Amino acid sequence: MKKKIIVPIVIAAVLGTLAIYLLKRDDSSSMRTELMDFAVKDTASITKIFLANRNGNSVTLSRKNDGQWVLNDSLSPRPDVMKNLVTAVYSISVKSRVPQSGYNNVITDLASGGIKCEVYLSNQEKPAKVYYVGNQTADALGTFMMMENSNVPFVMEIPGFNGYLTPWYNPIIEIWIEPVIFRLQADQIKSLSLSYPSFPQWSFSLERNANKFQLAVPSQGKVYSEIDSVAVDNYLALYQNVFYEVPEGRLSKATKDSILQTFPLNELKILTNENKEQGIIIYPMAINESSIILQDSIGNPLKYDVDRMYGFITHEKRWVVIQHYNFDRLFRRAEDFMLKKRALRGAVQ
Image 1 (cartoon, rainbow, N blue to C red):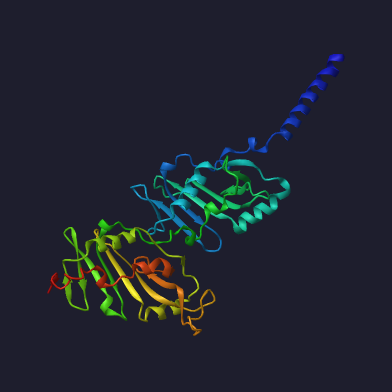
Image 2 (image 1 turned 180 degrees about the vertical axis):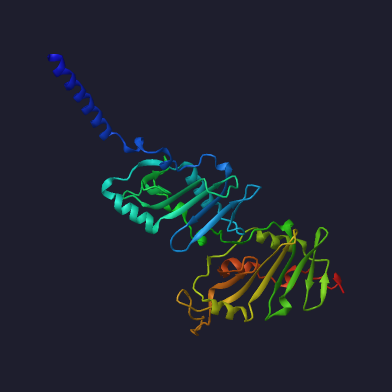
């Protein structure tokens, strides 16, 4: 009789203990593995990453055969931003489940404002991973994420990193574009021309002839073979890194089209040894709310900003804001490359 009583008690005790264990243990251990499997450990196989939000912003990062990443098929992404994204794709791991008390808010935020991330491997047409990236946790040490076709969000982290990861998945193209206009070594330049429509006597072009450059001066109709090679080398070295300040985002399309019909301050054209054309057309910037200096030295109002100009990058078809501080050093004149006493002797008619 006692045995009949003891056995049910033991079974009840075991089941009770098991129930307590199941309630206390981390719920994530009982989840389907694929709902938690965010990371891509074989980053060498990644050939494309697509990011998009619901505001119409999107970027596509594609890896070429030589291993270089390309932004939207034609641009060079910023190396630091690219590195952060690949690091996140590789390293993210589940920190915890989203508490039931915050579940509805997190689901709503992911649905309305989440960033979609698609990771493609080995040039496959279908993505290997698709998940949504949401906002940060209250302590800013975790990021809400959820796999596609799931309704189970997680708090994600990169072990050892103190911060949230949403900025690493930014789908706004301006964040990805490196603010570089020219990045050329001197030996990559086949020819370079700088024209001043209002001052044609300053215009010139440097053209490579074998291992030397010649100086062409259109206003004179002459080409100089004997020129100041040191001045040329020093000038071309300036094109290793030429940056703009910010993308231009305030002008309407009509205003930009109107500016293109006016005389520019100057136009810079470069032809590389691979016969690729690069260039920028530079226009004055009218005084605006961002201008700091509004008057000249005697108090007369200025018409144009003395610190900044507009630039239209011809090989990328983009408008940017550039600084006089960075660009004035490029604004040389034909005479700057001439051997002062030998210029006429070196002229080739």
